[in-house]
Length: 289
Ligand SMILES: [Zn+2]
Image 1 (cartoon, rainbow, N blue to C red):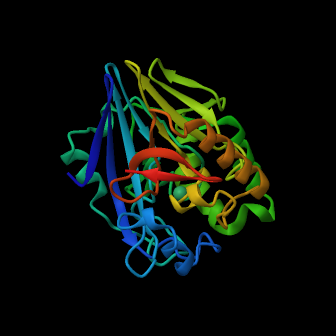
Image 2: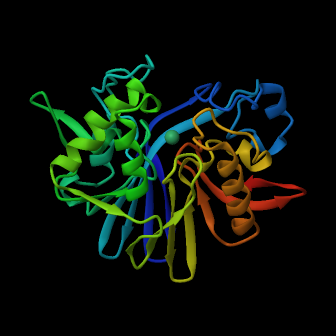
């Protein structure tokens, strides 16, 4: 399988990789210069390479509880017109990997997007006979109400950006128009084992996902951080953090809550092995895998 798996009590979490490479996040966190990254010893070998380039991944998580299958984030997707050359009209074998891992698109109960950015909504839809159709026809797709309303309003304003109009049109709105979307609160509980936690800043309605079963727990961050280097430097912002002060405050708050606890922490862009535990490290934090 092109990914890895974790068991949290009665719940299984599977990671399915769309893209994993060194260098891809190079300009997303401007403060994360190579020489600074090389000064954070625990980033090697998994999260930076020997010359200090960030290694990053784009992947989907599939959460299987005893009675439900929930997808968290749907990557970039195939066939989508995108400004980044590497993502434009991309053709990967991602859905073959999805099937090879034992999953069926018609057996997914929920699709949760932590936020509505380009690399978290792609496989919401797929191209069929020239139309964008929902990839998971029997799922309820969960969009945060705040998040959806922000981006839908942004459609008509300059801050929406030309690219986001395209992302909304091909990956977000077709599912809405098909009647498969539930707009949810940022503290929504999906099922007994899976609930959302509000983590605003990166986007206005950004959420993270807490998984709890049999006394064990895991936490999917979403993009309130992009790379483990931000555990060491929570003030380092991504160019795509919508509200930078709020993003920094969310990181410091959540890192403090997770540190030195039993919860397994997973990020949508953390390279293999992707999961670890957060430890207090002086004024900041480090990630132990
Ligand atoms: Zn992302």
